[in-house]
Image (cartoon, rainbow, N blue to C red; front, side, top):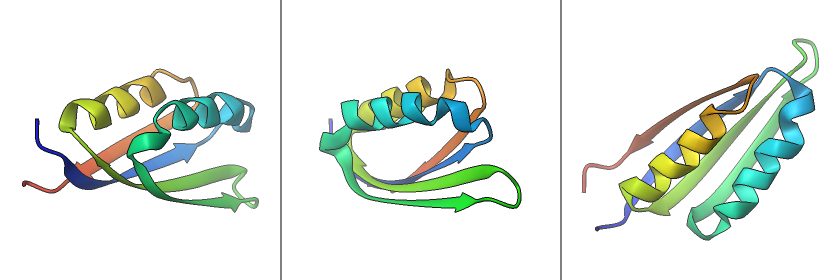
Length: 81
């Protein structure tokens, strides 16, 4: 399967879930090109953006595992080619 470039946006509404999020990100480190995390203290949330380079199956596995964590919202967008 062909690799695609994409972006994954993660909103961490339950800061207690952050260690689980980091564990999943570590598991998929081979497809993560870059990561930026912004704590929004006034709203008590964190926003993480990832640049990924992997197959659609790999990115789906990453977002699927993240989406199963309570207090986490995740969306992705991939190149068409």
